[in-house]
Image (cartoon, rainbow, N blue to C red; front, top):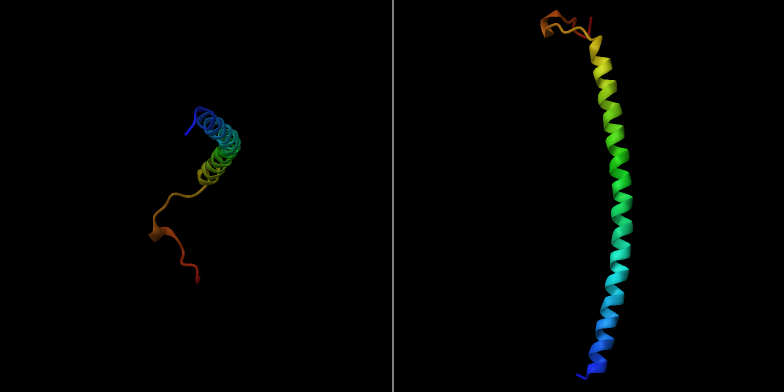
Length: 69
């Protein structure tokens, strides 16, 4: 293989690698934003659950009236 052909092959590979890195960077950036949004939703849900459970009576199952009454 000639030096010129090797150089062309290296340049071609480099071009493909640069494009792959660009695409991967876009994917990682998008996923990072999605993760942040999901974390925010999880925090909000945890807060809602915590607020909702504050007013719940913490008795035993024996204290509860069966649903058919």
